[in-house]
Image (cartoon, rainbow, N blue to C red; front, side):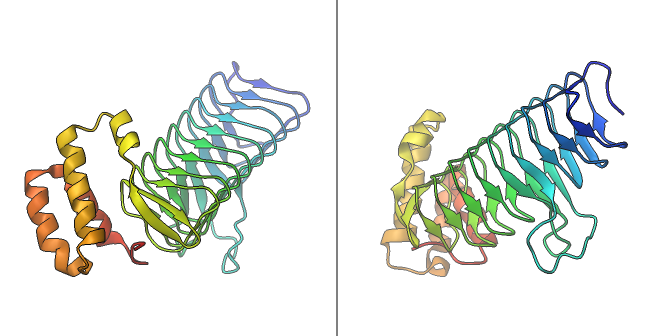
Length: 262
């Protein structure tokens, strides 16, 4: 189904079965597979390939040579009906690759809304990216990586499979992330290590001073007390009763599988 208001360049190929909504713009030499859905007002600049079971939301801008929904690079993949889900208002720049999920990883590769994925970003199978994230040029996410809301990842950074990057994290460029990065933390290096808190980012996002002080107190418990995470959990829970924002740390620790950077 192709809405009458959609523009499709004569050189583009849109296979039967694709669903193209209101005001979509499909530029020259794009290829759209038969199980692709494109939401209203999304723009494909040129030479974009959308394949597999791929659902693109509204008002996205996808630049030339991006490839979304293609067969993933997991050798266990055997053609299962896995898919890609992308939200709204994302900027997906040149040569970005977003691969379909795997059965083992929950079947979906998911990207939220309002993200900026710069040139050559690679999002592997079964990754989950939240909202308002920025990934600079040549960022690579291994399979099953989770990136929470408002995270910023510097260029040339590689993230090991199954890692979790918390909300409001800032990862410096040319880093190698091999373990989970708790929320609000600045990290850099190979392997990435913590370098304090993303205070400027929290201020820009209107965190209250009392919240920032509580986050600083929690950071000191985790990184400067000399105690294990199990030893500091009671103190974190007590702090969270007074400051709700500290629950973000507790929730993150509870779902960390690879251990946090230290």
